[in-house]
Image 1 (cartoon, rainbow, N blue to C red):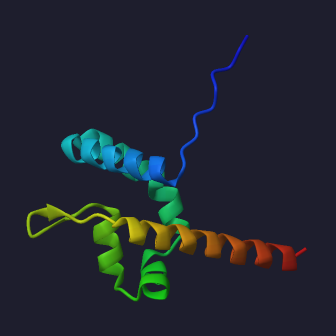
Image 2 (cartoon, helix red, strand yellow):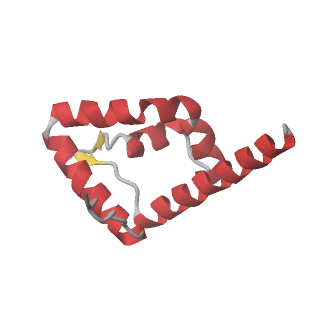
Length: 106
C-alpha cells in the first residue's frame, strides 16, 4: 500500500491557500463554523489581546476583527502579508518561550 505524497506549502502557498479558504468561508456559514471550531482549542491557549498588544501594538479587538475577517466599512478585515509575517514570528517566539519554560520544569 502506497501513501499519497504529503503536500507542503511554503509561506506564499500558505497565504494563497488561506486567502482562498477565507473567501470560501465567507460564502458558506457552515464551513465558517467548522473552521471556527477547529481553531477554538488554540484560541483558548493563545490570548489574542496579548499577541495584539505585544507584537502589533494594537488592541485585542483589532486582532479579533482581522482573525475573524469581520466586515468593516463593508470590507472584510484581513491580515496584510506583513501582518501575517509578524503573526508568524510572534507564534514562533511564543513557542520558543514555552519550550524554554518546559525545559526549566524538567
